[in-house]
Length: 207
Image 1: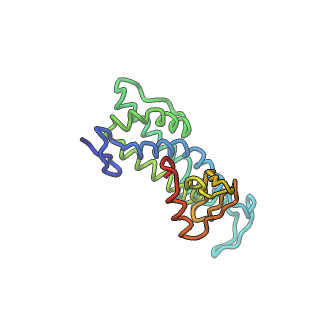
Image 2: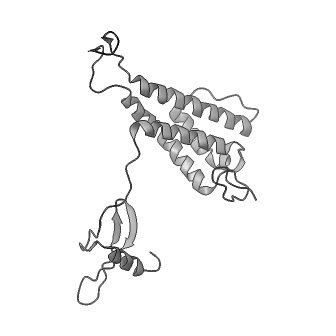
């Protein structure tokens, strides 16, 4: 019995658990668009090309790039890391094949994503690969911000809507920390007691 290299959960012989395999798949799918967004952050919005900007030193043409961002994270760095991992995975899986030709960040992420089941089950460095891809994502997020929060599914509305005892039953969702209000019947669950009753009366399959 082996354990996931990232969290230590038992994995029945795999190097990554199912949760971290899914997470890595999403990171690989998101990286190209994320680094394209980083590229947008490299160009200052308030200055034009060659604009003279006063600094502590002598005034001179301002660089069109935000060099602090450029030093932190860029498309070239992400491309280099994913390329090296693609080459190594192919070397281990098909040791008699030549190294793949250069293909760019998007293609390398897509290739790694397609090989992910084999990587999670058979590639001894799967944990290191996942760690470095995670580092790339965190570096980019430090520039462009976190992803937008997703709605939370809370169950179904348990409000009685007529004199016959009919229960609404519509799916309830909310943004993290936001109010809980049924969009179908308009019932609001405002207090802690309301939320406890909502949870208590959930149908067995939705609880």
